[in-house]
Amino acid sequence: MKCIKPLFAIGLFGLAAGLGLTSAKAQESRSSHAAIGVSSPSQQVIRGLYLVKISGCNDCHTPGHAQSGGNIPREAWLTGDTVGFRGPWGTTYPANLRLSMMRLTESQWLQSARQPMRPPMPWFALRDMSNDDLRAVYAVVRYLGPVGESRPATLSSAIGGCNMATIPLSVLSLYRLE
Image 1 (cartoon, helix red, strand yellow):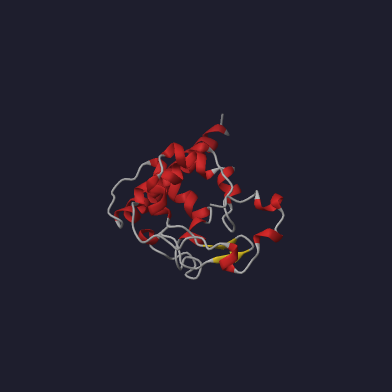
Image 2: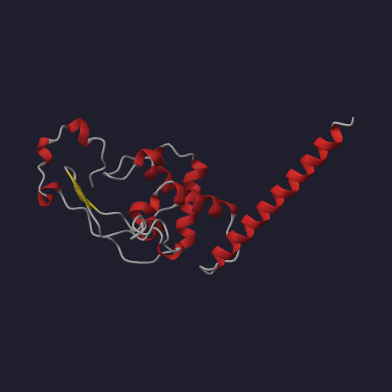
């Protein structure tokens, strides 16, 4: 019985510390969300913000994100970029997800997210996400709202200087070539 009391006290201390950290994290979350004019995002949006941040979505879809070491305000997140990626598929530009995803219902997003896309988009990462994670990403884009300009359309390989005829069909079938 004497061992239980110290363990119980340690457990209570741990619980109190954990609640303190949770409270501090919640306060940090509230203050950062207030900066973009929203006082209390849903748990789904908070989860989505986390997923967008750790999944590397901003690396390509947010101008200057990589160059700034990730120090870009959320207002600029997912607005696309004019830096193109050139390869045998042509030249692709990171889409302004805050505009393009506004045209999709959640159901359409779930279906679209699992389809192969042009490089360098790591579409397989989206394919492997759970429906709940994809819904959270969708919720974030809706939460952030439409802003910015559409990015340049994909340039075909003929314009990009590559001949698609030299690429095996098995490789081309990996990409959604629209």
